[in-house]
Image (cartoon, rainbow, N blue to C red):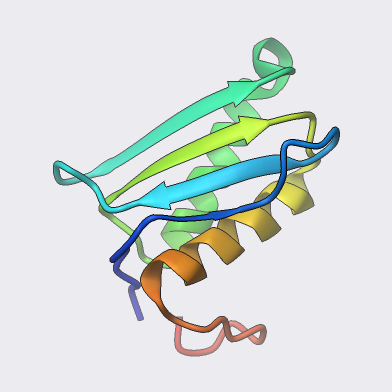
Length: 100
């Protein structure tokens, strides 16, 4: 089941070792991912790849995503992405991964 982003929503904080993720409906078709990070030079490509993987897992093709990273590890980025997507789509999250 592909989710549609129907409103803007965020998850996370701007504390050290966390990431603030904001997901918004796309103004134009496609995905736009903006990454701002204290470790952008070293891990920017990995942060973007993680965001793309989570969006793909939810079947999202149209969205604008902002990640303001303060050194979050991969599992934190994934969790914040999932929470923001669920909030922005108005759908609950099925932790077993069914119906996704």
